[in-house]
Amino acid sequence: SLLTALITGGKNLVMILPMLGIGLAMPLANIIGTNVQKKKYDESLVQREAAYKQRLEKERARLKKLAEEQRAVLEKTYPVLEKLTRSAKTQDKLLWSRRPHDEDFLSLRLGSGSEAPAFKIEPPKSANEAEPLMALPQKLAAEFWEIPNVPRLLPLAQSGSLAISGRIPAA
Image (cartoon, rainbow, N blue to C red; front, side):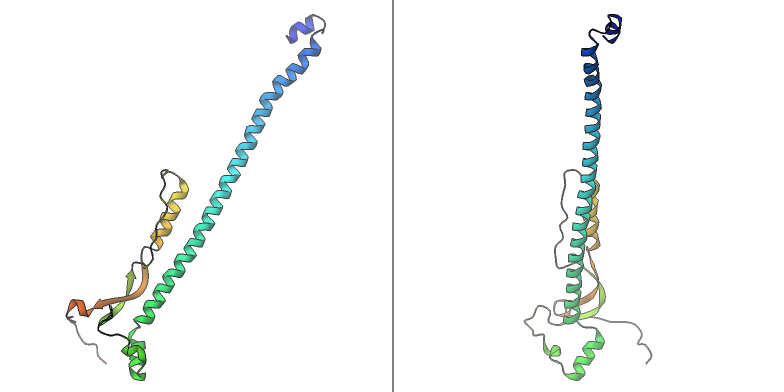
């Protein structure tokens, strides 16, 4: 067509040049539009990931606070030997706080260890396990699977007896 217009002396050139311009501009506009949309989509994914990670950090702080509260309650309820000895010497009311009808009556603190949390953690489930963000809540739940350094108890009322063996350390 362009060749024909040049051969015929340019009579159709006025029609062909705008059509040629439109023919080139349309694919170029389509490519530019696609690139702009892809860039916006990629930016929205980055924002989504950042917002999700921020939400998980808030959840981590909440779970950490719950774990610390559980540890503090257990430490107060079942103090270490030094605090218990002090309570006995000062005849603190803590010494007489357990009654036979209490669930933890005759519970003996053996030391400290790890324990399951009193709160429930349920990470979200997804049909798309390949989603890269799905590993993050699972990892968060694993962090709080157990709470370390909490009082470990032996319920003497249920066990009946306890035998301790070994050498008595020199005083």
